[in-house]
Amino acid sequence: MASQPPPPRPSVSPSASAPVLPYVLALADDLSGAAETACALGGPVRLSLTAADVAESAAAHDLVVDLDTRHLPTAEAAHAVRTALRAATPAGPARLLYKKVDSQLRGHLAAETAAYAEGAEAVVIAPALPAAGRTVTGGVVHVNGVPLHRTDGWRAERAAAPRSLPEALSGLPVRTVPLDVVRSDPAALDAEFRRIADSGAHPAPDSETDADLDAVAAAALRLGPGFRLLGSGGLALALGRALMRPAAVTHRPAPAQDRAPLLFVVGTAEPAAIAQIAHLTALGAHHVPLDPADLAAGTVRLPRTVAAPALTVLSIDGSAGLRPGAGRALSAALGALAAAYPGRPDLVLTGGETARTTLDALGIRELEPLGEIHHGAVHSRTPDGRSVVTRPGSHGAEDSLLRIAAALWPLMATAPAAT
Image 1 (cartoon, rainbow, N blue to C red):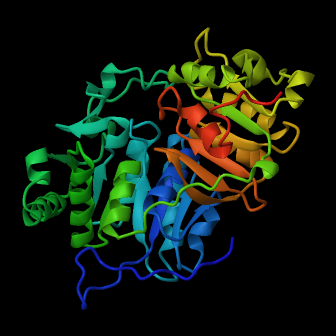
Image 2 (image 1 turned 90 degrees about the horizontal axis):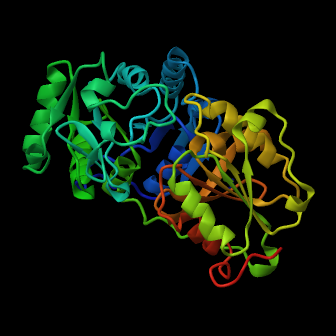
């Protein structure tokens, strides 16, 4: 990727004597979240799929690294975070640390947060994502107003969804901060964060809006690098705004004559995926639902006709239900199948594990984020020029995949896909 000169980095409270803030090192546990974070931060940013890149000495840009820990055993996930932090510390310019977590608290949240907290004064924990209807009130994550543990957001997990942030972070001292304090005078919020840190705990502020997250990010920055930020893409956006990043760029569709075939690889178990795929098939896309048992056994072979369509959708057939905990194996098999797809298509990958296993199978270790198509759907470019769109499985309305297709192929919304 061509290097770019770093832009000036004004502080949160602009003044002639204010220090210039360091660039951000963000650690993510899956690829779609890493891409979302890179786009949220804005400015010059590098998105790496290689944990070793944390130790690079040149810090002329933000660095977002997918540690790919969601599928690992708990102890290994925590070790990966510790290793990354140690690599980031010794040499080179200091970086502002950010830990990207799932807005529905999936993954090894407690273990990774405990590892991330080592050496910090406190970790400010704010997983709210207002743009996707995820809020935190009374320390409880809500999805479109419904407490997380009463939704089906954890249907593919081995355990039940936690009832609160303190429960999700069991073993780590966490103190919730109510909305009235978040929305109070900045000095009062700073004092509350400091009081909680001095007690040996970590503040978990309630947040319902982007303005709430702006207040949280600004407070952490005022308190200094000892207060590390941990949250979803919503807090990453707030951090980007606090650092006065340029607005996110818009994706640039390829000229009509250069358009490659489009391959959608839908690796999510979300029920909304069925309706999202239906929007594409209504316009002529070729849909290939794959039996999860055959996929896991490695016996799937794509029919010869699949090589011809300009737009194809591969998805896991979840009509018989999916076995909890089988996600990584299915994603790996789906990724290998997508990587072997003929014709070098551009890729739309939903679900962080599916995105990661597909790019691993293709040997792609770095992405250049170009911008968001819609919230969470990040358009990136590979070093060899292929377009890749990543999107968390739980994001997007019914027309999400159609909007992505129309963005990459502007005529897609008005005409059937070529076959």
